Length: 259
Image (cartoon, rainbow, N blue to C red; front, top):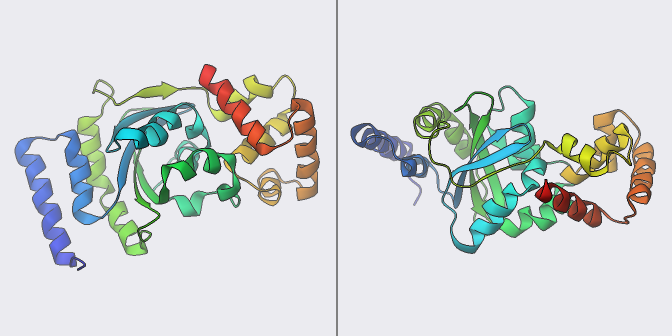
């Protein structure tokens, strides 16, 4: 039976009161969100240009390796949430289905990482904890559950100010962290990966291909025709000695995991 707005508000107030009475603990962040929304995974990442660190999460066992550890090895650079956090001064509510490129589900990032997480829907809120970085707290639901409704998204967004205040208390730079990893941002990484072989425009196209943009979407971003994108793509593959996006993704991930 769905809880009423009054019940949700009561549960939220009681959870906030416990934090104030007992002092904030990391689990409180999870528990506060759980009073207003049902979810599977909660992840808190701090992003800065080319870097990501896992601040807190509730993922355990084998899923942790896929969702957290493997993500920090480099795939985070292709995550729409990372891109949004790094490109907007006020990312606001982030909805994976709205931010994903048009061929996200055909991208190697999706096939080799996101699909393996078993995440079917994800929403996030962004706020500043440490200067020069953006902290993103996201919650997910698996394939067997219904997607987040617009009302639930709004509820999560409305909770952001208090969650941000709690995050600043818990996760300033001198606080313990759960795993750390970083590498150069994707454009810089690509210059090291293939910049001596590809032109600047070709590097831009590789970046968009890896993120899941189609030829049409890539053309719209760069202001060129889809036909021109396809020609560039053919030349890119020839210069790199590859024949598929899968090979491109695998070589890129191998490269950044060593840097």
